[in-house]
Image (cartoon, rainbow, N blue to C red):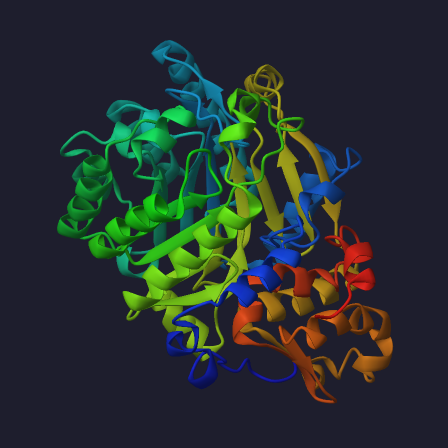
Length: 478
């Protein structure tokens, strides 16, 4: 950008302006609750094609090694195994109790790490994230084998300069495990909690006593983790406003650094495990609206600030500081304090990136394994970015991360921003009328309530997969 980013959270966007959400606010947000990308990348994975394979990947990496020099890398490791099936889940995973199957996957993963190290060179690692599936379903020895291989292949920046995170299921964290994860090098822990209510847990096949989650938070704090995040879901079967309020209250009292309140979308035709959910048990749209309102009420009363969409952060967390400074970023793991780096993707289905391309490893476990055993990188599809893609990526990132779009920031590439993006700005007129944002000759600013639908605002600038633009253009202002 031409000018440095500005922080927009001080003042009108602090939590004191969002202490409550009225029934009218909830109805308004519900009308704009349109399924669409969350913009952890742009363009999204829906745009990938099978014309980008190993040859194109190797060429892209070779060019980036020349351009980036010794610039740090990010690593993502996909560990797709779970102990049990959660009925709400839409992730790429395999449920197995077979430890030998996981061992074979780890064997193959170590081969892939060595191949990636060969083409990327010894660039230092600034970020590492283990996702899944359930990374903590690996046993201690399997986790150590993977981490040892990563550290042998790539130099890691010191603990205070790097972010090493892992997604965890509290059911896989017997006492002492969290401390073991810290000793292994992890410094951020993300806990899948979803809901404390037993009836809800039974309805989604994830019985998880609250004590397990609360103990994991306490152990992480005692072990010296830099931060703990908790994921909750609203809209699950059997949830009521009172029960979900109790869940959010219980989590907020434990004071994790970050809490995400994700909306459950029931799409059994897309995600077969959801067919196990009794549709009659799902909350009505009216109840679902009140679940979110209850969560906002509880979290803001406990001192959390709404960053955007469904993310809430405690005062003092470095992510909130980055938001206030205008230096917050967004990547495949969500909001981040760190700028996007070249991302090395490891494991079946994993997605990687450079500044100019995205790619994804094979989604088929057998195909992925056969490729790495044969010495081939299992690149199944990807996308080379155009200059237009990069411009729109920057625009979308500004909206998502800074809640503003200053036209002059793009003056060197777009001398007349309002004219160039006249169609996109017109699509947002109904949201202006609904007082979710404001647009003037200088730019676009997201208003406090608009934070919760910021992905729809950003999506107006999505040239490939705009979320519900036909609905947006036809929306009548309230």
